[in-house]
Image 1 (cartoon, rainbow, N blue to C red):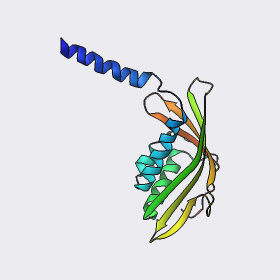
Image 2: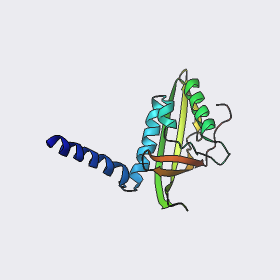
Image 3: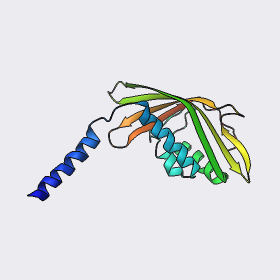
Image 4: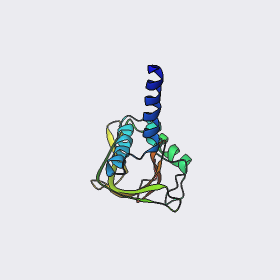
Length: 157
């Protein structure tokens, strides 16, 4: 009998975890930014691209496959990557289908290092890019990036 009660408790906890919102605050968006920053430092392409939606589309028309390719090539090209952000703010709402969305704004600077020489990848010399990231919340996989605006990246990735 106690086996069934324990199983029922576990199933209940799992259902609560997946189907009840855990609060839409900037802390969840900040966690996404932190995980991407940390994955960049580890040169973990999947850790970065795992936060992008397969329906991603940016202001230049690039979709998920293009972004994944750019990220993978940059991680291969440089010995190490250092990413940072500041001034993160987020606004939450719903789209026309009732899905939770967020628009996050932050100043971002990404530098690649090759043979000890720094190369600015996102941002400028001492001046980060101010970007707006659009995210959509999935009940299972959490917040996923669906678009990015404001990137000024060099053409020599």
